[in-house]
Amino acid sequence: MSKFNELNEKIGKYRWTICALLFFATTVNYLDRQVLSLLMPDLVKEFGWTNTDYANIASVFQFTYAIVMLFAGRAIDWLGTKWGYAIALTLWSLGAMLHASAVWIGTGVAPVFELAGIFIPISVLGFMISRVVLAIGESGNFPAAIKTTAEWFPKKERSFATGLFNSGANIGAILAPLTVPWIAGHLGWQWAFIIVGGIGFTWLGFWFLFYDTPKAMLAKGKITQGEYDFIHSDKDEQLIAKNEVNEKVSWFKLLTYRQTWSFVFGKFMTDGVWWFFLFWLPAYLNAEYSITGTDIMLPLGVLYSMTMIGSIGGGWFPAYFINKGMEPYKARLTAMLVIALFPLVVLAAQPLGGMSMWFPVILIGIGASAHQAWSANLFTTVSDMFPKKAVASVTGIGGMAGGIGGVLITKAGGYLFDYYQGLGHITTGYTIMFAFCAVAYLIAWAVMKLLVPKFRPITDL
Image (cartoon, rainbow, N blue to C red; front, top):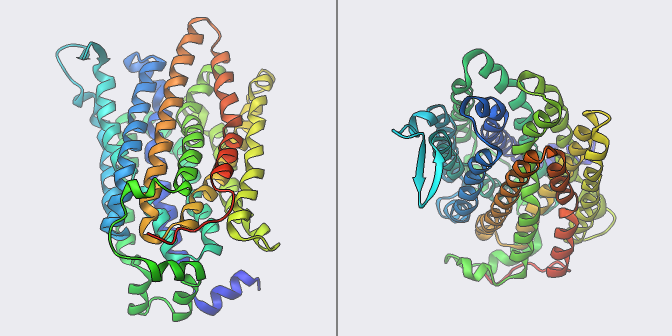
């Protein structure tokens, strides 16, 4: 029996039930947000959208997600994980289903809507409104999940637990191309939004049945004293807990710490890469290889299956260095440096793409897999250094920065693709975007290391 299994048998393993709940919520989260990108080629034909129109719809989601995530983190800290997570998932499920009525929402007398001299097609406006509602709800997922992980896992297990639940993003990304084109083809695109959006409501029953804080679960007899003590076994967190006061921590106070800015920059530089892969890969495969509908299921299924390896493996990777005697933060940064090298293979995606579609699919898959490994460790740097009461707030600040980075990349992509498509060479647009995706992680790591070269926990909040 492995040490991992021996530990669980000895003290209990209810915390992994909590991790499973986070995994399924994250799966639903990514399943809902990817429906639009998979239906993009069909919606373009139906409504006559340009790449810029689609970029506007996608960037409205990202911009709203970015701004609201700042408040979502604070709301999760205020409401508590149980109710905060439930409210967020309910809202984003309703937002996902609202897309089915997006055209009705945007119905007007004229085919375009004018705002401050800007003309927006009515169909685009309807989808923008739906994406805003979706984004408001989805912004609560990661602050709630990271806070839950900090509450239920000691530092030695957090990156692995984060990698496990974050792999739900990959499962959602895999399930979407396997289901959405089929639903749209047989029942219509509206039903794809309705059916996929409604899945989230089944999660709520399990959440209220199985989730509460470790203290509450100990009192109910759901976890053992041994597991409770193991969850709270980090000595530095015990020190932080003694110095903690119950007053709220202001955003301005959090922004005075280099640790906050390290996380913020890491998210700003790299989140947009994942957004780009998520929102533009179906369009890329359609533009370069004329793949659409159910034909897209196989390449996207392969690509996102690869990302599961990165998410789970990346969560485990720091443990390799910890077992060699490194303290957790140094081990995490060392792992992140190695991970940051893998996206460089994306530079070869376009040069090799002329030989076979599978070269860019595999290479982009490696880059996307590296992102998930990077993300699992980046999130954990917050719970490593901040007291639990501030984790969701700091995650929200970083999430806002990541969302803004995503908006910039999405808008840049839309502009570049329309520009080079007009010149008859859209391949150049994708080459430029892939080049940024390849080097973003090394830039992020260098700045993060400069800001926080050594582990410095926050003990004065």
